[in-house]
Image (cartoon, rainbow, N blue to C red; front, side, top):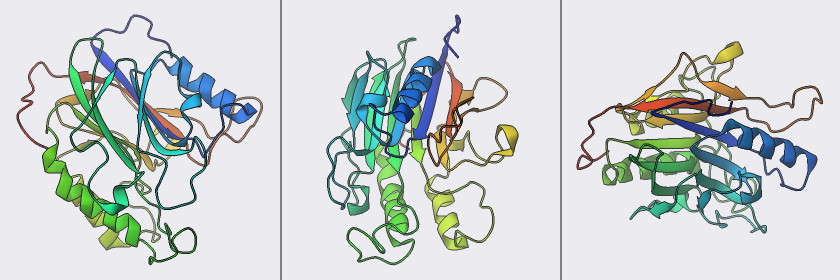
Length: 259
């Protein structure tokens, strides 16, 4: 999956790595996969900085999301080949964004500057029967979405990506997610394209997603997948599969517009 001479495209990937520690066999396999992918920008959720490729630049959402702090653990990390400039609203705005939201600007090899928002939207039972234990099912999830919808006008509506763990399949499948919760997510991301919605290769349906402004376009026929299990060894890498894609950028984008 190395560059192989690609020109004018940006390779983006995201993966929830299930707290894989870099010194473990599982972590080393994930680290090799991410390094071999040769992405320009990566978002890792539920991870450690040590599994990200060498030589890049990292910003993260912080260590505190309302649970006991464990050294090195981050809900969201963003990695880029080029340095980051943190956004004015780098860590979000809502209480539910704490530790689960990070935003910055970074250049690409072509010289274009992108705004990137890394997220880990709370799952259905966040703070229900663990950690704070003071919320109802889906309450933290809905709070995150409401806060994002209010905040998104502060971000450009061109050259912008939102990626990470959304904790929902898009479109909704089955009855697990209440219709009103799913509708709230779709409304909050209205105007963004979801490169990872629907069926992916092998009929997979993602909850790790890449959303982007319409001036970014998927350059290729499909989204790529990083597997839950290591080839050959059968090692369980994560309870999520990762996703990546190659994107082109239109020649015109108005950076003064807001998302």
